[in-house]
Length: 117
Image 1 (cartoon, helix red, strand yellow):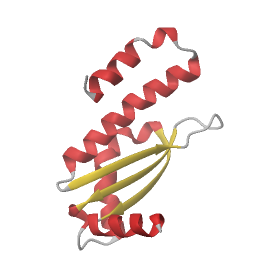
Image 2 (cartoon, rainbow, N blue to C red; image 1 turned 120 degrees about the horizontal axis):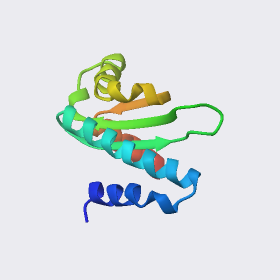
Image 3 (cartoon, rainbow, N blue to C red; image 1 turned 120 degrees about the vertical axis):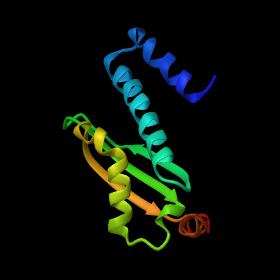
């Protein structure tokens, strides 16, 4: 079973879940769509990480995106963030806070090796 089918099955079976689990499952579905939207929209994207750090205090999701793409090569951070913002614009009404990290594959490997040591 693929990711999309698994998410769909979990959302459809959500009648058995309590409210907090239901919100979590619906968010999972939204984040998978967000993930694929970024992968499709930015050529050369090798990794997308979506971290949800939402709480019960405010409405809307609090997300941290890490996007690794060759499309970012030679572009300053602001231009990189604009590329990602363009990809997720349709989801912004449901997002309260969005932190974006954008790296080229070489930058990402460098950051991973520093964390591993």
